[in-house]
Amino acid sequence: MSSPTARTPRSSTGTLNTLTKLLISLLCAFGAGLVASLIAVVVMGILRLWTGIPTPVELFGDYVLKHIDVHTFIKLLQTFAPHSKTTPLGLALLGMIGSGTLLGLLYAALVRLKLPLTGYQPARREWLIVLALTAAMTLLAVLLFWNELRQNFFGLPLLWASLSTVLGLLATFAVYNTMLALLYRALLPKQRSEETKHVVQSKRQFFSRLGVAALGIGSAGASWGLIQRYLGQYASYDGIKTPSPGGVTFPITPNDLHYVVTQNPIDPTTNRDLWRLEITGLVDRPGSYTYAEIQQLPSTSRAITLECIANGVGDRLMSTAIWQGVALKTLLERHGGPRPSARFIAFYCVDGYNISLPLDEVLAVDPLLAWHMNGSELPQRHGFPMRVLIPGRYGEENVKWLTRVELTDRFVGGLYSDQGWYNGPLHTTSRIDRPSGHVAVGHIVEIGGIAFAGNRGIQKVEVSTDNGQSWHVTTLQPPLSPDSWVSWTWSWIPTAPGSYTLTARATDGTGETQTSHKQGTVPNGATGYHQVTVQAG
Ligand SMILES: Nc1nc2c(c(=O)[nH]1)N[C@H]1C(S)=C(S)[C@@H](COP(=O)(O)O)O[C@H]1N2
Ligand SMILES: [Mo]
Image 1 (tube, rainbow, N blue to C red):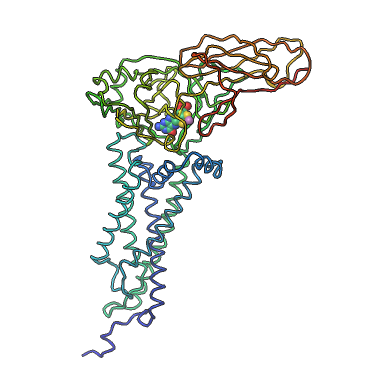
Image 2: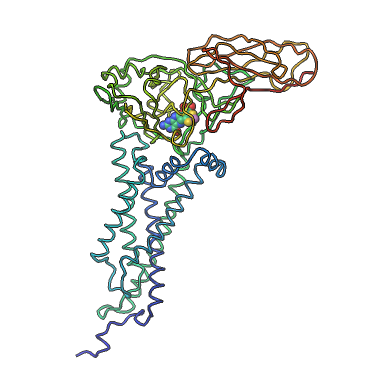
């Protein structure tokens, strides 16, 4: 017979009071939560970089961007400049790791494990809680990010993209919760059993805690590596402008000098085998095309100038390319045309960006769905494999990485329209590219620049050398197309030394002169005259 003391399990924590046990549990839950979060970060990083599935951090960012107004958006851009995309994402990532760590405490409260533990294996009840938490977190994320799910950086069609994003969320949360259960157990103090020697038991406990620490350090290192890799693909070309070397603007902008604006920290690298163009919604015969099939569509080429709504007066977020692709009208005709109830058209992209506009307004300007830019395959940063060009609209409506055209009976919205940016016809604008600095008195000085009014075309450009008191009609180059900018010049001979303010103004094809009303880019697009001051001497 054994003695009564031998039958009572002895343990190192057997004598601990409730408060100490609570503190130990908290500490272990905290540690397990932190390490499980870091492992989840590794999982989401691998999914992002090797399968194109967006991370919960990016989904969260996209969600926030669609739920703030344009002024908050600009404020955030300024607050985090020059790392306006990466700093908020980094903070969101830290927030995610923080929440994951705190969730460890919630888990501890739910499982209420009695200290000391009898073993390392989570019991059925713990697994059920893991399951329930995984389901709840996935469900919550799916509901919250419902409108963000349909993106995939390798270009999966929308339905497959949504499915794979949901699976990605499920995998990330399942790994997190499973690790939480295992690590929490691994860290908590164990009961001593009679069968195993004390030293063996404490060794096992020591090594399992060491293992958790090593996992934590390892996954922190791996996360760091993945973040570096992610940043290595960062779209640092976002915001590059088209220069006018020596004051001359090329009528056609070479591809590598075309301005770029993207919402994405990393632009999609669309896989041409996965990608499809889908024609859906209120169209007579919906259908889809592979990359090879779109090349077979009847195509047309046209010079179209793009201008970002964030282009200030006189600025250079404006470029012109010869775009080749299928006319939207032609494409819709191949599908039996719009049904009578179709009132809007929505364009969806593989990066989760989408826009919608009234169908009749869009068809009226003869948009192109282009796969060639200046004779070469559409560059990745400009929307490979296909983008939309809607003449007369700001760049934001000219979606890149197009994957679905949908005809609808209602306005669908999109990032910038949800924020409250203007999405009507772009404003007429003109820019002075030369001269600048000093000019010589008594000699001919060529004043020149460009003017643009979208699909309305340019009828006339005038220039003033006396701050708008008198105007001279300039000579226009023939435009490359009805949808492109025009070049203008005027020869001036400064007669007296001094400071001159040159001003330009354009009149569009409808006979309307651009407004002199000075207005910044936010939220309606800039207006006002471009002015340049030169010194004659
Ligand atoms: N899918 C997608 N399309 C997009 C964007 C984007 O971020 N994603 N940015 C828009 C904006 S704001 C502009 S100004 C133009 C810029 O086109 P570009 O980079 O080819 O000059 O693309 C538009 N199309
Ligand atoms: Mo833009």
